[in-house]
Length: 306
Image 1 (cartoon, helix red, strand yellow):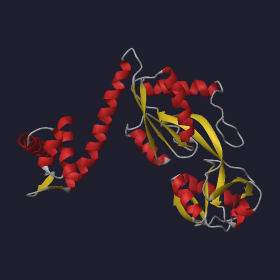
Image 2: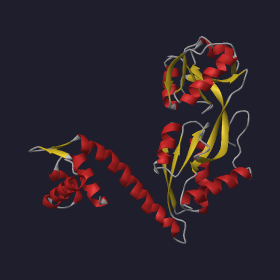
Image 3: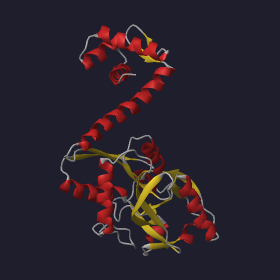
Image 4: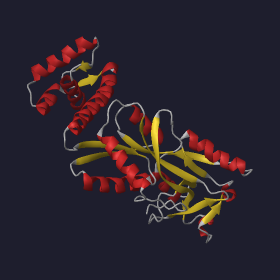
């Protein structure tokens, strides 16, 4: 398959019309139609149901559209990475990260890295740890910040920070009216809880309560910090989430979970299996040097980036 033809196909699929697609591609319609027919013959499938005014994707067409997006994204990223083989450090680093402390860590690193290598640009992507690792495995991200645990057999990892687990709740919640800034785990037993949806997190949090001789009453799972704030604001329940921020400026508040204290650990990872030294390796080396030298320090008790 020719990348150029894949771009033609994607444009037709998005526009739903050969004429509009040809105009957008700045070409005439007959060559475009011919290219798509040749692609269908090459793949031995029909990609479009052709109507008088619009075209509709077949099942095979929908599959190819999804796969074409991945192929073209990877091709564009590879082209940018090839620039790193120049004597001057240029190109793009794709960094995927979870919520929580990760964006603050990334901002510190990128700021320092750009002082040394101003010709670099970054592409940032946010998601859950599982989605990020899938993105790494498909080659759509160069490096990532995930929450432990992770598969150390497949990924190289550098611990870059940690922050305490907290109970995020509405300021109107009875537990929020107490003056303490901490809350023993047992006080959360029986409360409606909203927890991260990652299986390892569900199992771990459930284990905390079992160790305390209590049962976890989880009514909802989620993966996004903004969702956690929204649920807490409406007093749907108490969210168990890492201490992402000290003051949201909204109608929520946090209490650090104690007895026992629990911490979320952040790890900078990339796949072990890689064929060549890339721009991402330079970035990781920079972060590791700065972390080891103490330039990027994390306050152990609060998890705050200094």
